[in-house]
Image 1 (tube, rainbow, N blue to C red):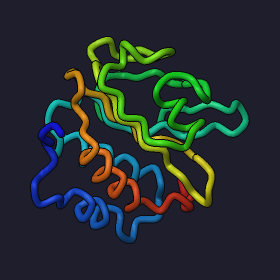
Image 2 (spheres, rainbow, N blue to C red; image 1 turned 60 degrees about the vertical axis):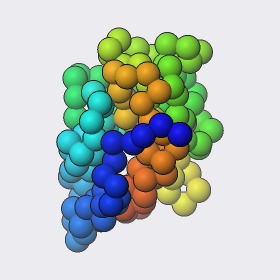
Image 3 (cartoon, rainbow, N blue to C red; image 1 turned 90 degrees about the horizontal axis):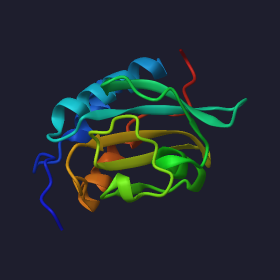
Length: 158
């Protein structure tokens, strides 16, 4: 297992819970979680959310930190679309070797995507990119799943 850049005391989930506590606005909470994680982790160049567009059956760009990104991703395509279609975390050591990878930022070499599941349905994904190959460990994925769990995904307030 590779070393992680997540703090040894693993305070990120607690910080996320404190940050969103009492705030009903989904967009505000997603924006703050993206900023929290982007600034807490080393060697990431993009952190953000894609949300499901029910009418087009694709993911649409949500709050993020990093360079401008692809606005729409077809369901089941690329790392994000695959995570959404399978409802499974995607931890990709080399995105350039991933069949169907969508290169929003050619500087990205590894990616971690966590599906956002509400009442058994995928409503979006939490996406992290790194310029380093094999950046994300299983421990990173597990801890960031706890960060996602801090969100009230049922809240549709905008």
